[in-house]
Length: 270
Image (cartoon, helix red, strand yellow):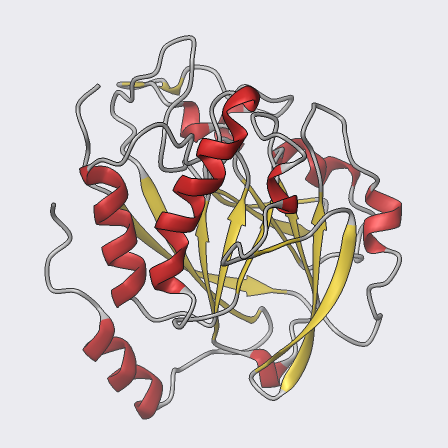
């Protein structure tokens, strides 16, 4: 399969009840690597993440392609993320192609969230970062995952399947990050996504949406998977999300704008 350049999509995401002191929090969201062998697409994605500016790097599953090859997946995961650990904290959940043993490998350069919530310090405040483990459809305990979330801090939930947002109680989570769909992987003119591969409308197969008052971002991912491991009109992507309060205008500070200008690559080609 030919290697493809990675597209960077940037979104400003207005969120109800998002704290003003967290305004401008930047999240890099990637998903669905389906690691097989090192190629130019992976190198390009890695170089972009080493150059772009963000506060957290969040990964929503499907590191592997076949569960039986999980040790190879662990090696590829280390190779990809090792150069990025100094950029920002990296957190992840597993997807349906991942072996549950993957997080047990020592010295991985990222932290796996396995049906639990942690509190992370960002921009002088706290954020609930939750992750539900979905190594099979319908897997993971959403109630247990969110049980430790503090009500006085906003919550970001990592869930491989986008349909998880349909189960989130209104007002409980401010942002859900998902993958799995590959953006449809194949998009046709005038039709768009042919098959979202989840129990969601085709329009939710990629991008930022709101479902029952909860914002959700679905990544089109980096890799491709069987039975047809090709991408047509749906290039691999990584996304940069800037989170802001929905009830206030947001203007990045001069320092933030300067920092982003310096770190942003002039060209995004292989």
